[in-house]
Image (cartoon, rainbow, N blue to C red; front, side, top):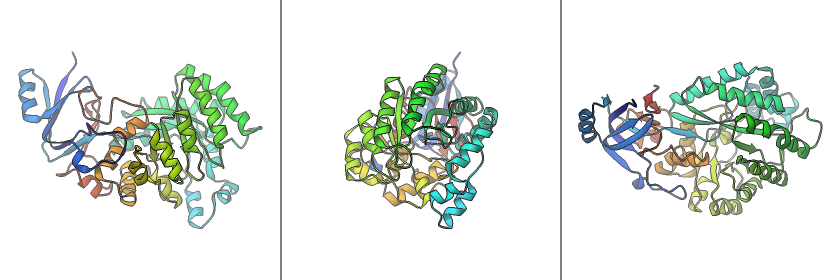
Length: 413
């Protein structure tokens, strides 16, 4: 028999329901229930409303009640739409060199950069990578992130990329958060691949993606579109082939050079991520379509570069999601809430816009329609802060974390 359980009362409950996926948001648009409860059934949300009313029905129907005895603010579990948490080793030396004024080419020539992470990740076996990934995902779950996108891209050979995706899948058995795998074999052309960019991308399309599809290791494909990686024409051709094979598309776009957002619009990508150098033309392209822009402020902090133009994107009518970009090189912080709070300050985002960017709009960036909003039928992923007012969440700039996290209606913290 499927258990029905009532959870509450919550001083405030932010459902994030009935809000648009695109455009600006004001705080007065947020649906806030007071003295609210959430009725769960079989890991999903069965009802939302006044706790006392739901409690009367629960007692009549012999439903269990999980009482919350402190002042709490509840909201949907956070969703991180962009991470690279499957890797081995670290790049602390790179960070030190950047602080000394060294450029990325300088660091790469000295044995650092992405090549360093690729070598260390290749030297780790799938079990080691699964453990490292699960450990990072558990930290994120404790911070309220109940759904985590995880990219490959530190293997850069067929067997190594398969190993990483298998490790991500295995890590999902050790953590209650949902891990959403993405194939980023097109991160860069590997240093030990003898051939052109096009030859490497053809290898991914012809040899790697069919195996990934057959084994069910990922249904999303990503590519790093930039002058130092793959040019827009190369990315466009690659993504169209991946789309024809049945994969959903996302793209690392406009981080250092423009072109990626235009590719995202042309191929109908689910999201375009980074966007630090996007200009007026790129913003208009993203606002005109259904591509979800994903800002990655931790990368800007790590590199000392400007942030994605979040305010301009929203004002133009685009959506906006925020990811942690947790990776060993440019974004080692790995804290989604701090990332969101930082971007909110610098881009003048409202509470509603920032919280939307790490809940239902982040879900849209992953094409997930069953989470990010507390409403009947969605999975019961939600979190609670020991606070009196939801505005204190971002006011504390990410320092205060949830005191309770529910995944599929079960408390994990």
